Length: 561
Image (cartoon, rainbow, N blue to C red; front, side, top):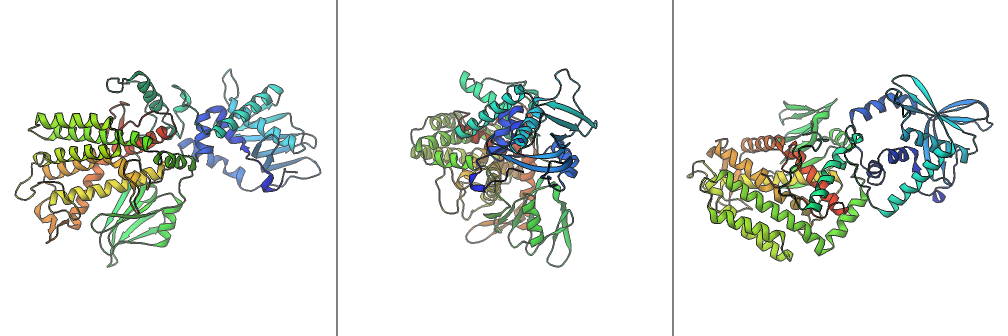
């Protein structure tokens, strides 16, 4: 009665809800169904809550065609190529009527019921017909206004539905993501606008076509994604501390049994544990279920690993990532933009903080940025980056206004850092690396396969790739600011025969300085809207994915103004 056939004989069936999404926005459907993207909005949460009573249990469908009402009925229709879950199925014994529940009020516009609603009901009607029912009408019930709106299943609607099924199958078979809508009002309340980036992608494609990326400014681009995330990372630095779950909160307890701090789970985006910090199994399981990663670091701040729930479902993106990474020409095209953007941002740091601003250094960095953009090989690019780093760090000490006798900076060194400035830089680079690790993982990438940094056991190459352009803009800027504002003193550092490290209080201070920077809102240099640095990282990772999908010709590095 319900179209039950052996699993191995069922073709890939299109859910009726996805067909409705395709009618609404082909790109939205592709993101959800093919790439596994989904984010909640106020509307989706409200709709799920109002819809929950319908989905409580699946009612059986009688086999004698007597009158019945059945909730949450699942159907498959292999011949049509769809599957569906009917909110309510009504039958008078002769005809069956699918009823689809929707939040909100029935539309009062001249156009009548929205096409996606009609398409979804038509797909359900076709599934009912294939399973032996007679169905010539469906109903949409609007929970807000408590109205039933009938939908006639005529040949015009059927032809449109079948055409959409064919179009969706073609799009998924070709593996080509549909283009974003152009200035559509449908994007305004879409929960996936921050994933889709419709205006941003359209703008960058226009700039590529017109070659105006340096001079063009868009004042009308819509800000469809929040400037910053309401959820923020928490950091636990303290030997013997334990993270526990209590109700809807995470609590941090010291080794002597006293509670140190707490945070509401809904306000946590990631949990960072430094050194000998423990976390209980109930807390770990709860965080995995909520998709909140737990990151582990050494006492010195080196990123050791991550504990997370089910990984991102976007297999298509990882396939493309592996294809691009295996192609030296494609990898070089991304690496060039990354290194060029990094050098430009180094030059900006010197222009802002170096009172001397030697013209020869600025000129050299400008020339190296241009050379990086046109580099012919990865080896040449590595040499260009090395030359720019030497030039940049030769002026780094001039950007520090702290006591030179205490915080003298000669050159960049690491493993272990030999002076306080290098100790702070290394600690910040470690934090920034984990930030990009979490970001690219959340977008759907494999963090260990990069395009500039070569694969090596345990090295998060892609996170390090994405980190390059943000070293001067985020990490170096935090270090310069903290030293110049006297937030770090001589007592914050531990000097040994082999190097210099930070005290626990200094680490907490550096983390606080880093978080201030990440939550700071800036005007995006290309898109023109206000956005936090943490959100910028996500946007850059998603723009990189658009390059791999072929929507953008070049990776647009973030270059601060």
